[in-house]
Figure 1 (cartoon, rainbow, N blue to C red):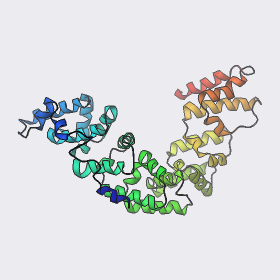
Figure 2: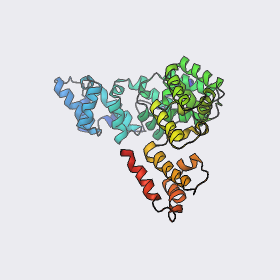
Figure 3: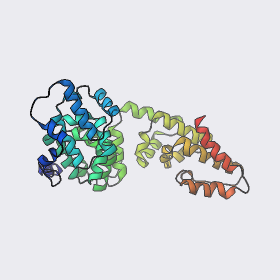
Figure 4: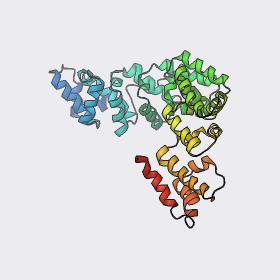
Length: 350
């Protein structure tokens, strides 16, 4: 089905974006020099040619040092072999910080075959379809993707589509959970079946989020996180309910889960069941949002100025909305409220 699209030659090697590849190669004297077939005089000269080439693409000496640590043999590659791949990345719109990050994180990418790996991988992403800006985002987030077997990636996308996952969720996978198309095909099928058995709907984004979480978890890791939730009074059925509501709640670290649950349950006196309904509350920044905002609301409750409140209405509001609703509204009665709020922000360093 989808994999048949790989047969299309969407990105011909000899004509990147409508201009001649050979003309592009010989547009400047440096490119001409390193494209010569004559042997490199010595190892140091080759290293200097590569360094000059990388500088032409905006890489700093510090970044080149990082490359040599990640890939000690990188500077033994002939510059002539690097140039077409750098040109290819540049021609599809990879530039500036994106270009530098991709190369520094994965210099091995420049050893992959242009015709057999880089261009087919690009075509695969283009045929999903993804816009060039999104492809660059995918490459930035998952530097392994351009070096992974294209047939495996296509097979995994096919499997998601076969299970009824719609195009918007496929785009979500590629942009935010690209590791899903990199896993072993049989493992992905198994995790999809697990998610189906838990009652997830393939038409909803939570389906691919759940698959993502299970693909990145093992039995022991899951149990360790479940133990933390149980410690604060949640049953196994409630933990599953929270997972169905927001699958990424089982992706949080044990420390973050414990810290958030302790604050909401023991400091704020909330029922653990609230976190089953809104597990997303655990995702907010603890020091910058949860502590100062909940601290203000606790003062208002203690003073009898607020009878009931919705946890998410506190956390989801913008800064201005929160200050208008919970601080400025009560300044006449509690002028110290603003100090309480900002003290909560400052306390993050204590």
